[in-house]
Image (cartoon, rainbow, N blue to C red):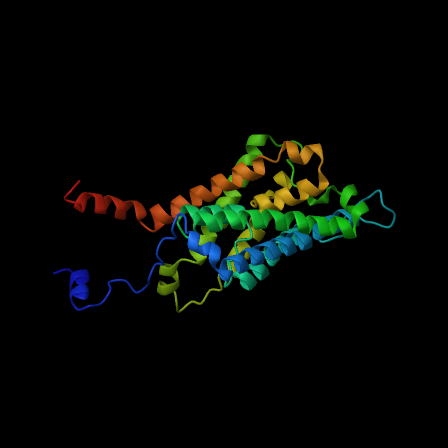
Amino acid sequence: MAKDDVTAARGFSGKDYHDPPPAPLFDAAELGKWSFYRAIIAEFIATLLFLYVTILTIIGYNSQTDTNKPGTNACDGVGILGIAWSFGGMIFVLVYCTAGISGGHINPAVTFGLFLARKVSLVRAVAYMIAQCLGAVCGAGLVKAFQKSYYNKYGGGANQLAHGYSKGTGLGAEIVGTFILVYTVFSATDSKRNARDSHVPVLAPLPIGFAVFMVHLATIPITGTSINPARSFGPAVILNREKPWDDHWIFWVGPFVGAAIAAFYHQFILRAGAAKALGSFRSNPSV
């Protein structure tokens, strides 16, 4: 008798971890729960704060390095490294603060990937995405309200394709960057990994924030780095100029494609979902 069979015969599970059950596609009961609306509010506020701090960082850097402004130096400011730390650090802080309430998505692409993996229901996924986009608009709006002249002069932190790069290059950068982020999210929150590596405690927001930091270092020169449709949507709405809108589709298509690939890779390759499905198919006598 195989080891798993002996374990099962003795009343024990062969696994030392428990996967949560798949989220229902549509759960109308969620609409009557305060926890549902509390999670939506948490996503809205977290995305608002994320845009507020990061857009201010970008505008501050552009102002400090503006050679046409008296008293400035092109070598001043936080630089690309500081901007990357701003995005990665805020994700670390905000995911840590909201993970127990809403999961700390703060990104429609992350929400989309988790929905494809049946981690969240369709109702919750759509509500989160709307809250994230509204939060991004309000966060960028706060920056403009406080520093209107600087916001307009330095482009409002809006994502757009840099000169010299093709749209295909920008799209590829967003796909790969979002894949890295969503893959890290799945890995950092994986119940199997947490059980196997319980002797090596890893705070999930830390690798997620660090992934955001690393991707920004690589892709800021290409697209300004989105990997988050809400992050691109908010500044584009508030700035409302032609160039950011011309490239805007890249910052939706790229992240959603990258998130879908990451969800498939983690669930069906790393977690052997495809092998399990094939084994179930072969063992079903009615097929």
